Length: 318
Length: 274
Image (cartoon, rainbow over all chains, first blue to last red; front, side, top):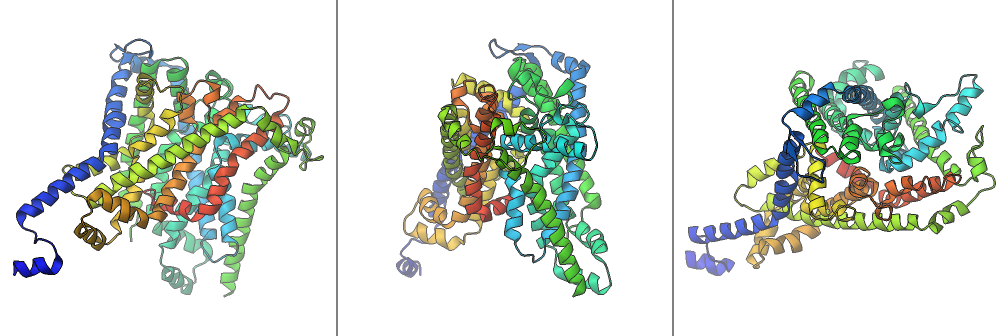
């Protein structure tokens, strides 16, 4: 029997010994092939996490070896008014940005989720800001919001209102940055929603139509609950990434020209990441900057945990 | 039927209005890049440039720095894309197809590290690259992509899992070792996922600002996004050049997007969000 099988397939049958040998060879290749990730994990994740934690309890200026400082960095951090200002700015930014972008992207996706002509063009139009770097966005928004010669001020004057200083105005800077960020990112979130919407079976809508439900009621009672899984993920991911917002504020409020001046007029747009960047890389207070990073980490961890717990309350899976 | 027409009408209205909001600022910027300085700073602004100053675009190149930034960006982006494709696909193949000790633990770690905010890792990264004498070189910007980032692993693994087992069985019978199976059979079969990962890495790296801002100090090493910003002083009184430079830096990625839109959308939907 064994003999015929061998002849037929041209291989030895899988005796336990051969099976083990094959497994060993698999193991060898498997471990060899995951080596890049193992190095990545040991050096850039585990090692870095531990180093970062250690730095946050030390005074470290890069040039000299870190000196253990106990809780000094954290104590200083919580007594520092600039830290609390940065914290408030970050929270304010996120509270404005995340709901606004999510709601608008969902409305757009619902509008796009039917057989319309020129879909490809519409999608491209919404993706041009997504694929632009913040440097490009800086010049695009400058065309509109330049305090001296921008289109927005020209428009305000025309309808008889005062011209504004826009990004140089302490009160306007965050709402304006949020508006620009929504404008830039909405195409991306829209496509994610579009994928979610395409999973909603169309017969649900048809049934609702027979019952006489209008566009608005269908949206509120079918679309919104049925894609709450997608909405949930969008909310988590955008909250987490918004809390770490750096590039847009660094570029849009002048940090790229002079890092110490980043954060807008009177530090009105100084968010945690900009604060971290300045402390760490401009003033070389790496220990203090690491403490900021760990505070941010803990907040993000709590946010994620909170959202995962809340998810059970309101997300409907099919 | 009537309701359906009404719904389509509303859909068109919303989407055309929103497309205009997306495109008009870019059109305004494009026109700004073709103005003279006097016209660029005129108030109230004129929308359309006259005369159309095409030379703004060629002037940008004459200053030399822009050319250097472009070369730097190309180097970083190309090496990053190659690194991401090779390392992620190799690691993903092992996770999808091979059996080895600690495999499941390691894969849980991959998923877990996707949750770690990059913020906590920046400072140690800076220290590591400093001790390797790689600061103020382009190396830190691309070398990290050669170490298999979790998003790419996840994406490629999904693609490899879809391939029927018969392919590797028959390759094994022909005497291929796992690496050969990966290289000769699995890679060619996953071209669409490859394209997705390539487009994503390209976009991230071409536009990246945080890492270059941290790792680079000499202007001649800057990549385009921070390079253009650093030209501000040099060009005061000629800011229309900077607008032209910024728009030129958008062209490569716009072309990639136009040709690979399908893959871009795929990547968006498989980035763990679904």
